[in-house]
Amino acid sequence: MSNILQDQTRDFCEVLNQYENMIYHLIYKLNIQDRDGEFYQTGLIALWESYQKYYGRPTFSKITYITIRSRLIDLIRKKSRQIEHETVSEFLQDQGSYQDSIEHFDPYFWQMVREALSEKQWIYVQKRIVEGKAIKDIADEEGTTIDAVKGWGKEVKRKLRPILEPYVTS
Image (cartoon, rainbow, N blue to C red; front, side, top):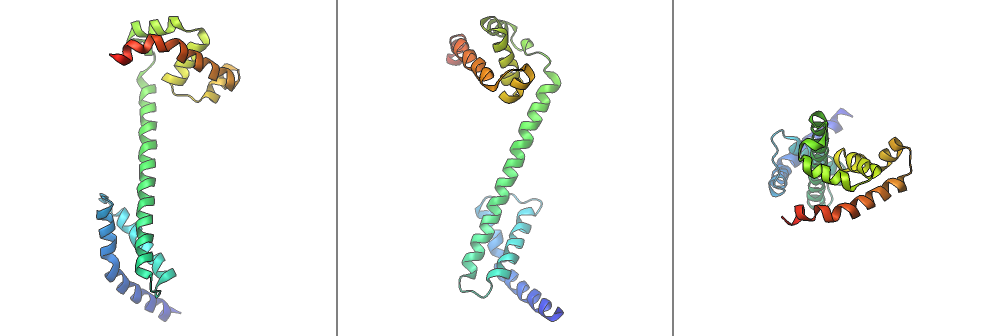
């Protein structure tokens, strides 16, 4: 059993010597900054898995190229989602830490908006637009239905469109 493992390891070392440049090429081609070596490691794992499944087939190099490329793209997407999630989370946390009241940004503007809206519509603006809460959460907090909250939102848009027009065109 250990002889088989040693032979397999020795064969993989030869494959690695032969295909390592493919990993570097794909990292370069995909314009990846691999400071921590995480993408290289992902490429090595993909090479190993491809070696275990497809080594000896005439299409091994094509399959390996596709496998490594796919894994690297998957990792890029995963990193992008993590960064996007962290950025949004940090933004929301930062907003909550110093934003007790939105009126201090432009008191005249917020007074004008507040006067144009009913109490429920103002709640919609505060909770949905400023705080970024989900419609379902607002409905739960206010003891009403999701459709009612959506209705508040439609009325807010209808009422604020003429008020906000000078801000958009300027």
